Every structure is written in structure tokens, then in C-alpha cells.
Length: 492
Image (cartoon, rainbow, N blue to C red):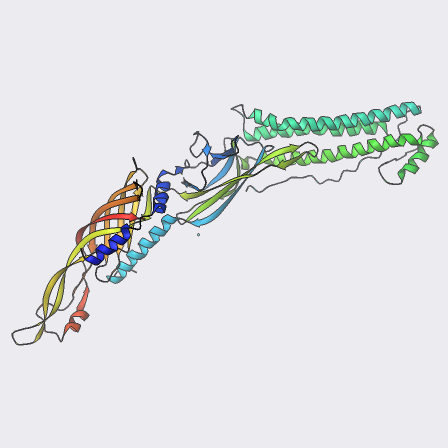
């Protein structure tokens, strides 16, 4: 081997890279999502996002910047989802698949060889179904059943108490929804749509509270025939009118309108609560849609669908936000969000990586010069035979995802694009992961097919004007010259 080649090999060997080890080893040991399965995730009790790539396997924390291999497109789904406890969002960004770069570099090098020798030359969207119907509180009307000031006063006070108690019951009941859904998931036969449907029924039940209270309150202030007195008390300026009407009837004194005002305010709150419950119910009803659930009803799936290709990987960020139910507003309040990012790539049984190192392979070629024949004419002569070492521009290892004890078999394909000896290398070897503290190495060998330049029309003994005639006649051989090669790689 020539000294320059030895020096070049030494330069390669001193450039060992732990990054390369990490990338290849990460791929070989990466988790693989079961075929045709979406990815289950959940938030652990210690606020870590966990996943379950293997169907019916164990959940485990997702390491930062981990790698997941997939056979097809998939969606992320929350396992046994409680929409009153957490919310889930997913974002996916396109990135280059490093394996594709190795294949691209190899293809470019092979095209270059072919050219030299004369050969050939591409969410669940957050939905909030909210009823926006304008509910106008019906006017309070004086009941003809009141025969005395005391009766009317007692009835109004009772109404105030009843409405307030009803609102408190609604808020108290809402606290049970979160735990009811959680405990319901303890039944193995339950599914997401069933659990959400139960929550919707609970909302319907609670909706009857403010609605029934409103009716009870209205009964206390029914329309009185034949007067038809409309006494909406929570409109500014109506107190005076109310006072006049009530005094005309001789039933209530002006001071009692304060109680009527109070019950009017409570009924307004009841109507607001009813609107909030309707909005809450609409949101829950939307979540029952089977499109958002896996076929077994265990995963609540969110968009986007993540579809890595051989050319493009995906950086996937999962964010899970704990929620708490604010009973005063019947609203969900966000807690501290937790996020994790991983890389999703297409599964390959053989992982392509570019390897650099020392390659030992030689082909013998003739070297021509000029001489003189018996008549003193300049002729072509065979000066010597040189051994040319191959100098690959690209060497790609196709490493098998079947390593045992840190050693994996591999195939090799390489291309040398030098003018002196364009060549293709075909072989195999072993990929050895993390040797000592240096990183990882690969050893391989196989068949070298090289094309050297040979005389095309001239032959030894032909008369020429000089070496320029010989150079002009040289061309690559049509059939490649075979030879063995051996390689040691330290950088990938």
C-alpha cells in the first residue's frame, strides 16, 4: 500500500465519532410500533409522559429525543382518556431521514462511476360545541295564591333559599364527574365513548336542577289574571313600577321587592349555569364520536396523522396538560403542561449508514510508454504493471437490526470515483458497537470490481508519434477487473 494511502487511512482512524455510534446503535435498539397500531400514551402519577409501542406491553417513560420506528402512518392516542382530567396535543415536524442521505450519497457515487466508464447517467381539532341560544329570563309575575303580605314574604324567602341550594348542589355534583370517569375505566368492558356518554347523561341530570329551580321560582310569580303584571325586577328603573303595582294590589310592601330582586339575580345565575352546562354537555358529546377513538375504544386519538416516509422522518412533540374542574364556573383550568419530543422514522430491516476507514484493495493494470523498434521508429511499449489501490468515495453499510451482544451483521456497497480506478465494491461484514471508549467499528470485505484504462485501438509495437498518442487512445476496459478487498471503518 502506498504511503499516501496509509496516511489517509490514519487520518480516518483518528476521527472516530461517538455521535455515529449513538445514531446507529439508537436505530438498532429503537422501539418499533406494532404494525397498524396507533401509539398509546398517558401521564404517569409522577408527571412523566409514557408510551406503549408494543400492543398489550408495558408503559414506559419516553426518553428525550428517543427514536420510534414505524411501519405505516399512525396517530397518538391517550390511553383511557378522561377529558375532565387532561388534554392532549401533538405536533409533527418534517426532518431529513439520515438513512436517506447515505443512500443518496451512494447513488450519486455509483452514477459517477457509470459516467466515467461510459454507462448510465413529497387533529383532532379542538372542537367546542357551544349552544349560543339567547335565554331570556321569564318575567316574575305576582301569584294570585298570595293572600297576605306574610304569605308572600315567606314564599319569596323560600324561593331564594331553594334557588341558592339548587345551585350549590349543581356545583357539588360536578366534582364527582372526574372521579366517576376514572373509576369507570376500572371496568375492563368500558370504552371511551361509553364513559363520555355516561358523563353526558350526568350533565343532563344536573341540567334538570337549574331548569327545575327556574320553574319553581316562576310558579311563585305567575301571571295574575286579569292584571297581567310583568315585574322583571333586575331591569333598572322597574322597582318604582313594581312598588306601585304591588301597592295597588295591597299584597306586598316595597321592602319585599328587595327579596324579589335577590331571587331575580339567583335565577339569572341559574340560567347562566344552564348555559355553561349545555356548553359542557356539547363538548362531551362531541368527544363520543367514534372517529376520535381507536376501534377498541381505549385510545382517544388526536390529529395529525403522523406519516414518516423513507425520505422524511418526523420530530413528534407530545404535550399533556393536567386539568382541574373549577366548580364556581364549571370550567376546566389548565395545570402545568408536560412535553416530550421523539423522532419517528420508517422501519428498515437493514439500516444504511456511511462508513469511513481504511480500505485495502488492489488491481493490477498495465502501464504503457514509448520505445524504438529496430528501424528507430517510436513504438508503443509495455513499461510495467502497477498495482492501484482502490479509494472509495462512499462506503455504505446496511446493518441488520439483529445484533447480539453488540455485534450485528451487515452488507456493504461502495463506489470509488477516482479517474485512475473507478470501482464498485460489494461485500459484507460485522458492525461492532462501542468498542472500549473509542466508539464503534466495522470490519468488512468482499469483491472489488474496478475499471482501469487500457489501449483501445493501439497495441504494443504500434508506431506512434509520442506519448500523446498513447494517452489519447486510452479508455476504460469494458469488463471490470475483479479483486478482493478488506476494510476497517472507524467513522460513520
